[in-house]
Amino acid sequence: MRIVVLAGGIGGARFLRGLKQAAPDADVTVIGNTGDDIHLFGLKVCPDLDTVMYTLGGGINEEQGWGRADETFHLKEELTAYGVGPDWFGLGDRDFATHIVRTQMLSAGYPLSAVTEALCDRWKPGVRLIPMSDDRVETHVAVTLPDSGATPDSGERKAIHFQEYWVRLRASVPAEAIVPVGAEQAKPAPGVLEAIAEADVVLFPPSNPVVSIGTILAVPGIREGIAEAGVPVVGLSPIVGDAPVRGMADKVLAAVGVESTAAAVAEHYGSGLLDGWLVDTVDAGSVERVEAAGIRCRAVPLMMTDLDAAAQMAREALTLAEEVRSA
Ligand code: FO1
Image (cartoon, rainbow, N blue to C red; front, side, top):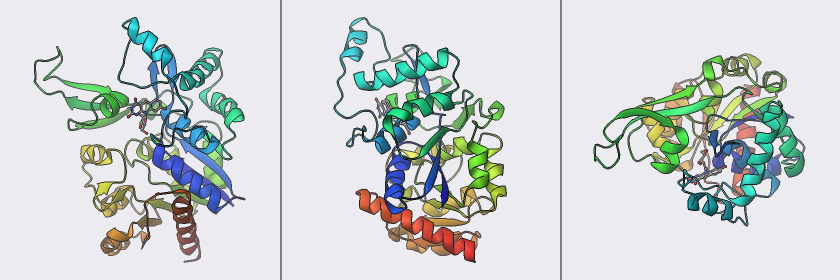
């Protein structure tokens, strides 16, 4: 079975680990979000690609869900001693090595997809990991900073990098707009559209519907390719009991005018894209609303408390895909 998964960071990576357990013989292609990518200290950092790669390759910091296990921060401390920032983004020594190799290869002319393949030669994630695009796409968030007078830009409306919104500001101010800068001009990376066209099923894991899956779908050709593939497309809600399972997805959903409920996220994707949707058992009451929108819906446990729970979620998604196929 050929499975294509559109993935963001932690939620996508943990779901994929479950999928590998649930369907060990499946041929899995992961299309990774690169809208979170950021240039820091002259290096290209790809948080979502790395989170998938490290999680599936056994190198992730399990508690955080991002960055490397057994990490040290000597390099960051040295940079801080020179007064070189930003200091709000935690890059560890082991993680730095990945960004150095990636940046060297990019500078030598290799596209991000080839660089990612080379990095995966080390980590052997057991899936084919492809960035959504080799072109630069950067998610920006429009915010109005509080008028505290504390910094020169307080009180100003400005667009900031997604990581600055997420990590530095902890999504503490409303996101007024989310803009995947460069997405309109970007082309899907080599292999993306081919994998979609050849897939037996497409899965949307419980990743952020706006800044992860939404950004991937914003690359021209990907949404259309999925809709035209004629295979079951099944998603899992990242919202359980009207709150995000992790992260601050509610903040960015509000920016696109979508309420933080499992049903609203399904409607946001829409029946033109989504055939099946899994909500958590606590949201069983929303099954009817989702089905009324033309999307087949089931309520199953959606908390990825451990690997077995994630594997069970993957099994439920594949079962729903089969139901859709034989309907
Ligand atoms: N998230 C944080 O909350 N704080 C950090 O300092 C941080 C650093 C970081 C470094 C590398 C990396 O691959 C991910 C990192 N993340 C950090 C996670 C990341 O900001 C976001 O959670 C994802 O981009 C959203 O998927």
